[in-house]
Length: 224
View 1 (cartoon, helix red, strand yellow):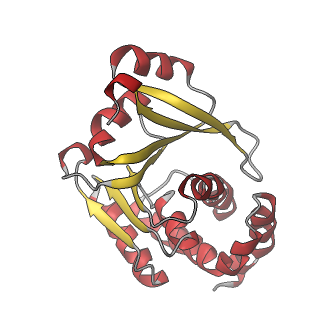
View 2 (cartoon, helix red, strand yellow):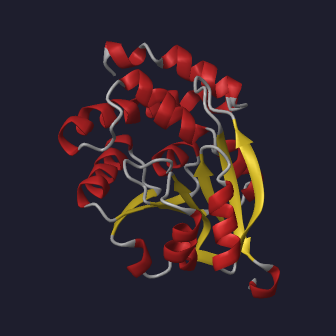
């Protein structure tokens, strides 16, 4: 690892401790190797508008790490299939794959250069549990995922419309958002069979902004 990226080891270790993930400090080298790959390939692939690696560390890596403890709580150590919808540069999918090598993670995106990057970084990091899936989310056969997750998806309504069929019969749909999206939640309730079942505030180390995780489910009369 280059000298510049090894300098991020201390803030990463501190972030893991802050998130209650001290057991994951051993995975820090993989997380920093992902950051290095993202910074390198972003120059050619334009994967993210964030250019500075220090900002990438906080806005992408730490932000994705913040959902690991809640997901672990939801799944309780069970075998898990995760579908990361609109994964982009593999966020949070690659991070979940690093932290949970026993989970199977599908990173789905319609942009070929982004899924190519995901394949590249999964190969470099030896993440045999991560698969890149290129295609339009709504057109793909169901991935039958235990967890269907999105980060910065267009809207909750669009999320359930295009990705709802990828959830297994007893699976969970999770949307990572900034501030609680009142208007989106009202639109979801009024225009679909889906509802917000729960909300959780996310603490992202080093980020002075509100973040939340929303659990979505079918309304009781429509649930499977």
